[in-house]
Image (tube, rainbow, N blue to C red; front, side, top):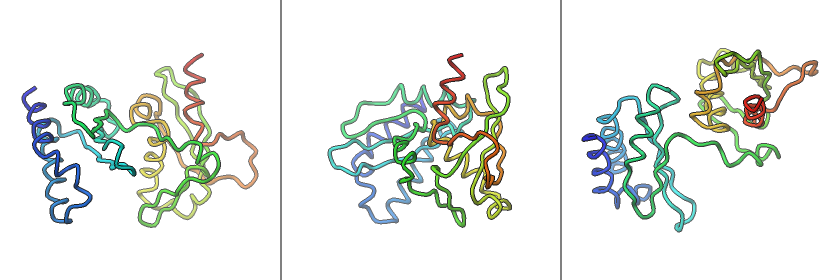
Length: 209
């Protein structure tokens, strides 16, 4: 509990600067993000955090505490957030939550995920679920339109996992997905594929049976 209090005390003491961080000089931003990360790792090395600033001034700033999808640190995330102080203009969140932009994905209006030379749109990705395991985790084949272009890129699978995490959330990814294999999207679909943005609906369906 001592390190939990130290972390939140540091947040409270530096709250004003953190709240205005996007308007600070790059040197100040780098310094405070370093100490934010450092203080979090004093509590648990397995955790990371993300600050999301609102588009409107009347909305709260989000500080998301993540276990990077590792179930071994889920309890540490929950305990830390459960002991968070109540601060005006702040919302402390346990785990990366599912995206609120599913409707944009369904309409094909979603922005692409760009990482180095990888450019993927979630709305253009489909998947095929494989046998559902007794442990309640699925294996899946994820089909990409441009897999043959990016297949030798070591970061490709990581980007796909990030997209899945954004769609269903960090905790659901760890609890429901066992293995992901990447393949080229077939020109003529002779198998029944599901759009990746419908993954949560698919998981809800099989978990209800």
